[in-house]
Image: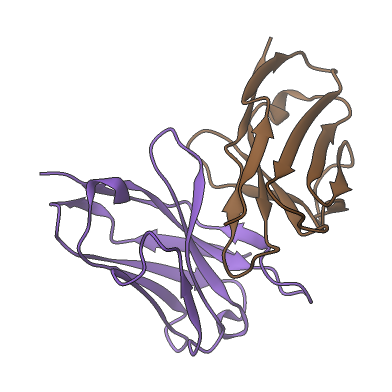
Length: 108
Length: 121
């Protein structure tokens, strides 16, 4: 099974910061990677798929990059509503889907 | 507006059974592949099962294979998850989720709010 490892697991940042979250796959997954945002008590929300394609309605301050085994999610200018937990997910081994362990972005 | 509303969660004893339902609205349910994804309290997301649009093809995570059954009723716009032989480690919020309709499969674009299943004596 493909394992997805996110780093860091959590960190603190301030509004206006540029932040980057890393996701690593245990084997190459081409660009079959999605990113989701989840706020406490809420359902996840799709942000990016195909490693770098922004889902409709998602602000352009979110961007994704990478292919193969190493991927990043970048928030160019952190807003108050962006404090949440972020998950990467591979769909290379569909129908088996695997998620990373999550990265919690907290207010400094 | 796409809506997915789960129901059927609750407290069940180990070894017991439960059936979850997910009522879909705001889109043509019969055209979409659907998933169940779960999240144990304070933990990450774990894929559970998937069903194609007409119900003829299903897949399961190894951890639930042989115990859980996914199904759907397109006439009622409803997705189901029959869970048998439940274990404490099945305790989680269960999300119903819709798969994005593009050339590549496996991207989930809408999620329900989830229903909590607690397995405990």
